[in-house]
Amino acid sequence: MKYKKLGRTKLNCSIIGFGCWGLGGIAYGPVSDKTSINALNKSLDRGINFYDTSDLYGDKDDGRSEKILGEAFKKKRNKVILATKFGLLPHNGWHMPEIYKHSHLNKALDLSLTRMKTDYIDLMQLHSPSIKTLKNKNKMNDIFEFLIKKKKEGKIRYFGISVRNPLDGLYVANNHQKFDSIQTNLNVIDQRIIENGLLDSCGKNKIGIIARTPLVYGYLTGKINEKKILSKRDHRKKWSKKQLKIWSEAPKIFKSIIKNKKQTTAQFCLQFCSSFKSVTTTIPGMINNNQVIENSNAVKFGYLNEKKKKEIYNLYKSHTWINLSNKKNV
Image (cartoon, rainbow, N blue to C red; front, side, top):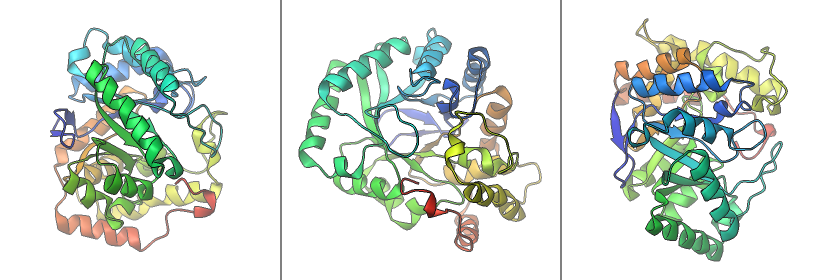
C-alpha cells in the first residue's frame, strides 16, 4: 500500500480507503455483520487504514456502519483513521434535510464516539450541507466554532466536509479554508473537479481531497449493468434506467485504453483517481473480501502519467455521462 498526507494534517492515509456506506446494509442491499467485519479486517491486513462512514449509514439510519467499525477495530484503534459525518438528517430520495444546531451536533458526535468505541474521531465531516448553508456566513461561523471547540476538547482531531457536488466543493475551497479536507465526486466519467478548478484550488490551499464514487456505485467495474435487480432499499433505485444504462456502457469504452491485461477495469479506475497529487485517498464502497483484494491491488500499477490522464480526459469529453434530468445534486 502507498500513503499520502491528508492536506495539511498529520493523517497519513492509504491511497485506497474503505467506503463504509454498504456496511450498514442499505446502500447496496443486505450484508451480514460477519461479512462486513471480515472485509474490514482483510483491508487492514492489506494496508488500508482510512475508513469513511456516517452517522446515517445503516438499514434504519441508525449508524450501524459505525457500530460495525467499532466492533472490528476496538482493539486496533491506533492502526486506523476513522472518518465520519454528521449534520444530515434521515431522508428518502433527493430531498436532503440538515441540522447544524450545536445541541444536535454535540449529541451526534457523542453517539458516533460511542458506536465506534473510541474517545476521538480522526476526521469529522459535515455531511452534504446545502449551498444555502455554505453561503450563510453566520451559520458557517457557528459551525466552525463548534468544530474548533471539539478539536480543543480532543474529541476530533481534524474536520472536513463532504459536499453535494464539485461546484459546491469549489465554493468551499475558495471561501472556507478552515476545512482540512473536501470529499467529492471523481472518476473517469466525472472529471468536474479538474475542469472547474477544485483540484488546483485544494492543492494551492493545502486541503486534502477524498475521492468518492470512483467506481460509480459498481457500474464502472463492468460486473453489473442496468438490468441488475436491486433490493428495495438499494440507493441505486433512485436513478433512472437511462442513467444506469449510460454508466453500464462506460467500462466497455474505457477498456480500449487499458494496456495491462492483468489490470481490471476497477483497478484502472482507482489508479486514475490516485494519480492526482491533491487526491489523498480514494474510497470505493466495499462489502466483502473479494472486493477488498481487487481494489487494494490497484496500487500495484503505480500512478498514471500526464499523457495517459490526457487520453482518459479526451475519452471522457467525447461522451455524455450524466443524465442531468436525474437531479441537481449529482
